[in-house]
Amino acid sequence: MKGLLRSLSLVVLIWSLGCTAALAEDRSLLPKYGPGAKSEAEQAADARFVATLEEGFGGDRQKAAQAVAARGWKALREGKPEEAMRRFNQAWLLKPDNGEALWGMGAVQGGSGRMSEALGLFQEADAAMSGDIDFAADYARTLGMAGAEAHDDALLQQAFARFAAVQQRAPQHTLNLQNWAITLFAAGNYAEAWVKVKLAEATPRRAELDQGFIVELQKKMPRP
Image (cartoon, rainbow, N blue to C red; front, side, top):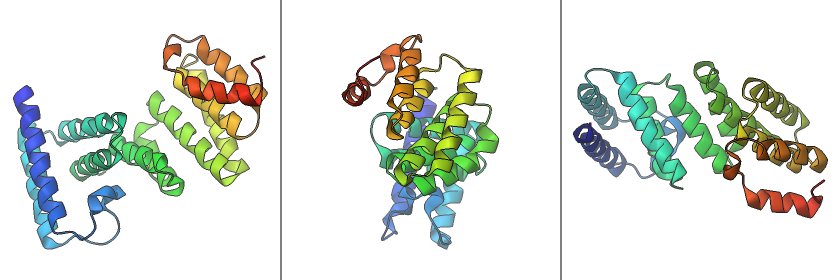
């Protein structure tokens, strides 16, 4: 397995260098490689990349796409959004209906403040990922961020509805409760934000709560 992962790293690196060298603008940093058709050289490089990864994973393109997407999530957790976008694009190239790749692109765009693009990608991923509770929580968070930023009550209400749906399925999903609280905070509803914080503080993963956010909430309203 380690040898396979080393080979994957080498293939991905070579493909990345080959594709981006000819580009004035690095389209690998744009979701789904951005608008416009690729050149014949780029298409040929893509075909070689896909064929090599398929061979490395015994012809299972789904497994190959999952492995590359996993590298994208790792990069995102490490604070490397550009690297993450490259990997999610590669996973999408392997399997365009890959919900994890679309979700990852949406997460990168949302983290960069490109909320309209983020929501479009989440919506596209929803059909494939609707059964994933973490995706559902992240989609709600992104809707909340977008609604708060745009002062769009309709988006905020969609976010609150999705937070509630996640809570019904997973009452102790810590980050869903925290993100619900953050969205309520952004909407100026500090009392209800405290309700969600207290619920989150009673969950098994309470150590993951953002204490900086709680400090900011206390500035607006002392803990009840």
